[in-house]
Image (cartoon, rainbow, N blue to C red; front, side, top):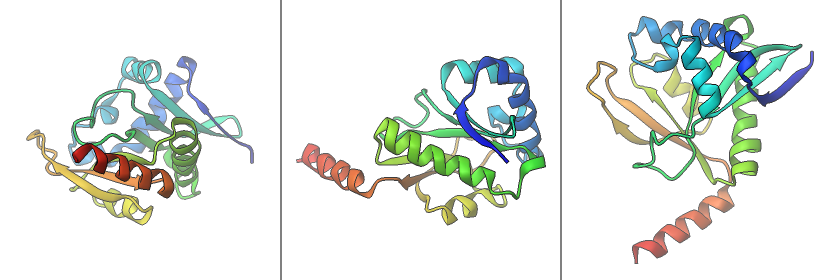
Length: 178
């Protein structure tokens, strides 16, 4: 089995639409208003163009995806990069591919390429298994917000990917307060 991690290109949009749509069934059932859950081809293409959309290919087929946002979704709350649109094709779920892709993005992209001490993501409290899954992966809740759109409480989570960089970050932040 060959595995390739890479940035998505516009030609991947149709496959990414399939992966995302199939992976977000529970999100739609919970009636969460997440853009990825009901994305059309144009929105997938926009995501590829405007962000860093990464994929994990298995034997030449995209099995999982995650996006490093270039937007301002959480800038008011945190300085750290924000990932979103994490999805694994149900045909590949249970094989650890989501874990592999998320780990690769945390280490290779967030820590090594971006040089960030931590990464953030958000999820809904009412989703039955996402919060515990991320917490098992060492993400910690740092902020709760509610957009009053029916989604209920949303949690911003953070994972420290470089303890040394994080210590330096805290030191610099403390100097700014003084």
